[in-house]
Image (cartoon, rainbow, N blue to C red):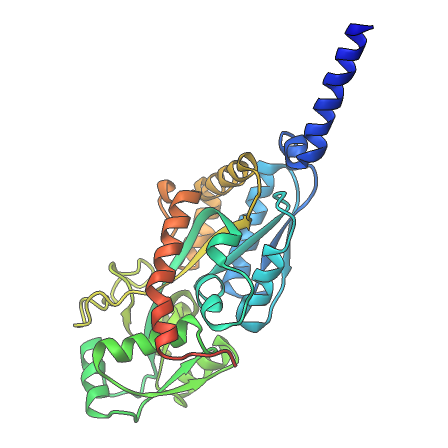
Length: 329
């Protein structure tokens, strides 16, 4: 009887532990059903494209389908909110970029802290932002552009894709660092802005570089400088901001992958490994580099690297956004 009682007590303790900690009970079997990646931007954009390319390859490692869910609105804050409020079980992932995971938290009245309420998985691809302009501009180089803007204060027009977007903050940053000024014109998206630059209706834009790649290569617009320390491999002839006389002026359109706070560490580790295997796949690497994306080194494809980078980006950009009193529109 004592043995039976002891066995029953042990069984009750064992069941109680696992009922109280459902993540322990299922972690070894993770994943056992489809995984959703929440993209806080419309389908067809660079973040959505990246999510689909990664998800397709991660499925091979994880053995489960990866479902892409586009949850848009309010400067990407609605999609981030959905991800943060999801169960911390590894079945809902949050992919995002500078706009969604840096800018949105500074501009919108959100109830979350992106650094505290999401757990990092991996740094993903990045592309620099690039200063482009219409072909009719008299400036031929980045240095000439700065000189022309200084000689014509407030006369040039520059497109943005929403208040507090990376393009908007980049342009404010460019004005501040170069001592220039121009009119900022909001657009509903990058495509109509690109069309107006090509048509000559607007002068400039600080754009996500891969968005401009085909147009620059086709000679439909000028590229003055990439906002990065190194030249961009996709357009190696375009100088950096350091080279045009605006040193240290860097901003990149980077991506990361997160899960809700409280997700088990072994689940995060499995997701991290799936990302690393995707980036190691030659077919995936080619697809991404053909789009102009720069894949981070393997030692940056982990939670620690993303956490440190994300924290530094918020520390750098929030004072600029708030100092300029940029509000959601």
